[in-house]
Amino acid sequence: MIPVNIAERLARLSPSPTMAIDAKVKSLLREGKDVINLTAGEPDFDTPEPIRNAAAAAMERGETRYTPAGGTAELKRAVVARVKADTGLTYAPEEILVSVGAKHSLFNAVMALVSPGDGVLVPVPYWVTYPEQVRLADGVVEPVPIAPERQGVLAVEDLAARLGPGTRGLILNSPSNPSGAVISPDGLAAIAEFVVDHDLWVLSDEIYGRLVYEDTVQCSIASWPGLRERTILINGVSKAYAMTGWRIGYAAGPRPVITAMANLQSQSTSNPTSIAQAAAVEALTGNQASVEAMRRRFDERRRYALGRLNRIAGLAAPSPQGAFYLWVDMHQWIGREIRGRAVANSDDLAFLLLEEAGVGVVPGSGFGVDDHFRISYATSNDLLADAMNRLEQLLGSQ
Ligand SMILES: Cc1ncc(COP(=O)(O)O)c(C=O)c1O
Image (cartoon, rainbow, N blue to C red; front, side, top):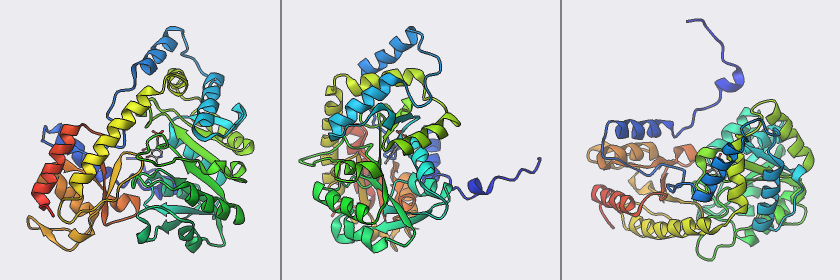
């Protein structure tokens, strides 16, 4: 083999830490093993029919060529209208960039904002991608643990405790993956004031913003005074419209940052798929009833899964107010044995649940917390019930 040196910036990039368990779940499923997969970060619903039809119609019309690199004018207008409806904020089309999924929007934003050595506050638990993207940009990840009494909801005091001389920005994710925690309007107001006082920028990942439960109020931090000009709001169609495979995300923010992001995109991926953009126009501007229908189904499953899970020995989860995950505290199992196998951390327990009970969960290690795991309840009621029965059988009830 010809020796090839991998560039230093990629040599230090970790593959997704959830890959090991993911590979194991998939190989067991391929072998036809009886496994219930609760690891997926995506809705189990099909993309609603009007959205699929819009893609087919675009294809028939011959919309199969390059579009402007940062998205079609029509989709940018649709994003402007959707952001206005969701947050009350008014953006110009020049302040919008459409990318290949929200992950790509985040990547463009991190590349545009983070200079070498810049500190970025990243609340823990974090979505696995944030620290890796910051490191890729030669930034310094400043993890922000959330005080235990806050049940996973970030508060300004947590941020203040971690602010350093080199801190330049904050990555906010409410509702959160993996915890489902949602920061209240009062909490966001205090964080907004802190951000202005310390002259930080904010990357606000609001991809789960349409999926909130009970009387939870979803707000964008960009709507507080002084925040619009220092916030990049990130969203997309993957979660709310069951469109993970279509790969459409977007960013809204101050024009100079959006322009820098668009320049990067024009020299890397160019435009997101033309047909997927046409589908996203229908998703964002068409009848929103399917979003509410899916949200209600998620809510039923959330209540069911939470009730069952909190009766299983040694496990506990707070009631998540958004997204479609339970963030399960398993610290009581650490240092103990299950069927003769030692549990030292979340990876051990995740492999054990998979191999002994046939239930796939994501260990918390990848999210920065090694005594938790994540369950996705974006699966059928029957499978959820079966999974909870299996966990209860293996671990016992309380
Ligand atoms: C918090 C968070 N942000 C962004 C994304 C990426 O979404 P997309 O499919 O639009 O790239 C995900 C997907 O899992 C996510 O959980």
